[in-house]
Image (tube, one colour):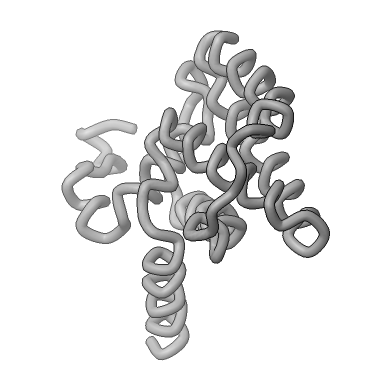
Length: 154
């Protein structure tokens, strides 16, 4: 990017068009030493990823679960997440661990609801390290639905 070529963007302008969390996800999806390829498609991919994460939390965070067997449920994922972060702040690998948790939550949702609730709570805690999943899932998903419908109308 070069200011003289005019192929740059101002963060203020991007934030006026896209939610901050979406931009944050977009930035952490690449390793901090790697080039970041800014495009509408990549921002939409970030939005889709956030929708998947929030969808997995839908209906689980308000439920109560027994915290006594919490460590047994999350131990493996916690080790993987920490290893990724300890490996030169490898946020793409850390996000991959979050999506492993999402797959497990979706699998357990029907068979072991309590375990799914524990994993959802853990997912939200780990995502907070990266500064994502800080909104209420229902509010995020409703806003996303409005945005998707507005795009179809235009």
